[in-house]
Image (cartoon, rainbow over all chains, first blue to last red; front, side, top):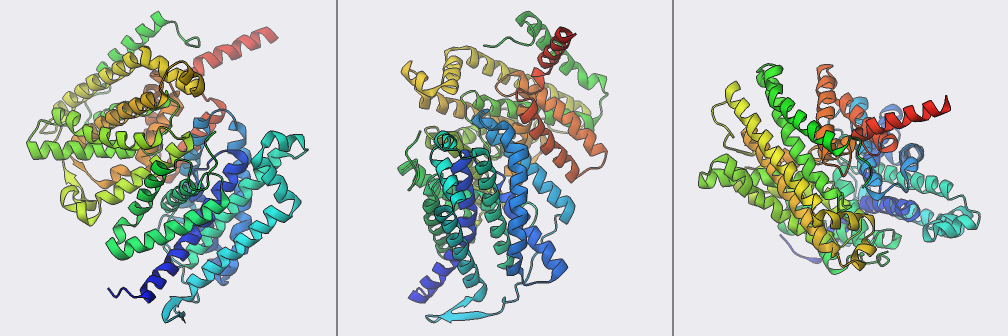
Length: 293
Length: 325
């Protein structure tokens, strides 16, 4: 292989692009954990639903799949709110194990409901920009990768502005910093739970759309691998930390793609796990995590 | 400890009755190879669920026990073939691989919060699968095709299945007795203390890391034993043994029976297996997974102590109704 600067740049862009989808998933998880202190292990299934919602609207309307973000995100927000109200709220505070295991039921439910609705065939959508590449510093990059990276950055900016500048966003951050204190200040924390779960699910839906437009195959059972990656990022970056999720996502995306390039594709998934183990041994609370309770 | 739903004396009778029923069941339902296979797999999953449930006594929950189930299977199949050991010996030696993996994951995770353990174990089974099918290891593990394993009792046929059934019944009984002995000892008390309040347990001189690691080791080892038994029963092993559903079954079984009880995984496995097999008879493929998922969610919300708390709940309900009358 020609190990020049152009190759390294190419791998970096691939890593960046792979990182984008993981970052969206991991930020959703962290947002939910920050406010509710629960981890939704069925988060990968929400990404899968986002992918299939995009697929369905694409099949019906034939729009440019990127535009379908306006369909997948709101629908997933509603699904997220429903999951929070029906499954997580009744058991909040009844013990960590219950909160973990309820998502197992959700995984069964969502995966197989999707298999009934859309069958378990492998599906793929071809983006209209599939064959277009643009040349940056002498490297040919698919246009789709660049659009995905830019879309993710835009989503993150909107999220940042929401959390920093709006009243609702501030209330959400207050709840995640101190739930009781927020309650005393007149914040409806249960509404914040709903909101954070909704936004987290919406981000997973966006990740699903981006997964589909990048030309990757999807099935009802695709959710677990991206979810495992998102968990790895959450652990690497620190549970509940949004900047940590971004850095962790970039580290993982880059490490994976360099691994594919040097030791082969089969080890791609193992690499993320090895990094995870290394971080857990060296810094058990993650790179940006708060110290343990 | 809270009041049991039956008195200790009755409990002993119940256990003896259950054993007698278990011993007679194959004779009652007829010596049908299909039903015997269902029963054998059910026994194997009782061992597996009990091993998984053992971990929850220390307040830990694993979402990836398929890793240990599968590693026990591979370990045992490889040991049996390489050294020509009888399968019943290989099962207990090969499961050492699962115990080692459990020690490795446990050593990293036992200091961490519950969330981390669940996330790491969730990933672990999937990662092990990718390693097993990777090009570098395929020569040993057979890649996606898997490898053949020596049959537990060679030959096949109804009579041999019956021997397998009784052998696994004996192993399962001994494993549960072993768990019972551990849990009623000082170690079991330490588990309770750590689960209820780690800080206070520490103050009382209990080292939570040591006990959690011990629980992880025991749980991983016996999950491996269950996996090895399944592999030798089926006669082959493929990487699909690391699948997500193999990780989730013991969770479904234990929760529906009752977490942190010895009877829970047993009752849960039997009840869910009956439901599952009947759903299969109706020809539902994805539908039955949806039903199991719904059932799990409903049980967690409305019956958090599982099916074994049902008699007590009914009695309570009747008492309340009487009072209101």
